[in-house]
Length: 329
Image (cartoon, rainbow, N blue to C red; front, side, top):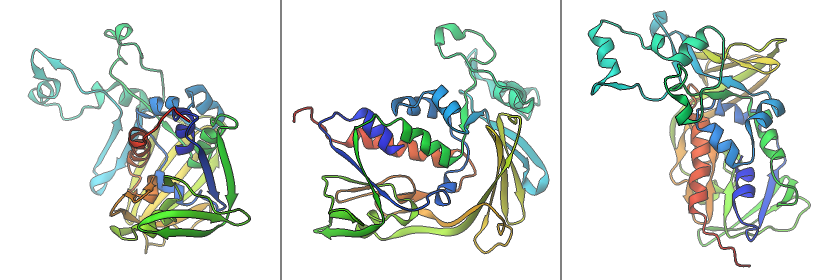
């Protein structure tokens, strides 16, 4: 995602080198979860990934949000859907009218929640002028995704010849005067740059050399299994509580992903498929010297909501506003 955005938005005068560490990132990337927010549509377009390219080129599916099942000791269930703020009627917030009428649930008034509970999806109108009083005018949507196929889709969006791509095991990170002075992959010469972006995940192979402190506490383990499906499931992720954590069922194109998250000492995640463990928290500094941590290299949050993917997108968007560029060669 980072490389695709840089390649699309930076001028050709900026040379981009992708030094890809030869390792399997699928396990650590599970902590990005399986659902993104409404901002993903615009972010993807800016990176050169159109919606048709995403849903046809990966396992992504449309999402109204998440259905939380049997929480609060099994006593509460609700759909947390994406939606614009509720309207103000005659100067009074809509939820105040609902309280006055003794109504305690918003679900019936959120079209995304209603459609999600019925397993249906339709695109909300994008043009404000055309929206009018259409029922879906205030609804928003995101995507269900598998991090691995999601990453491949963004890799395919990088314009041919725009980046210099290296791949291999990381053999050296040279540091001097509080900055990265170069890195080396096996079989390649030392690579130097003005700015280093660390997208290596929780290990933060570059940023940790400048800022090793990790501020966090709770350790979690996560596992994922995919079950093939002939038909696409409902456009909501189902999240259920269990004694040692929670589990999510996310419909994807061609499969349903079962994600289980629990305390690192629990035994409920000992199963097949992908698995990983991590300590939630963040680096003391996401930008140290000439190195910027992106995504899990800077911080890790629990994937109970769309927050992990939203934070990754914001990382990249903020980075683009801070890189000084010039069109002069």
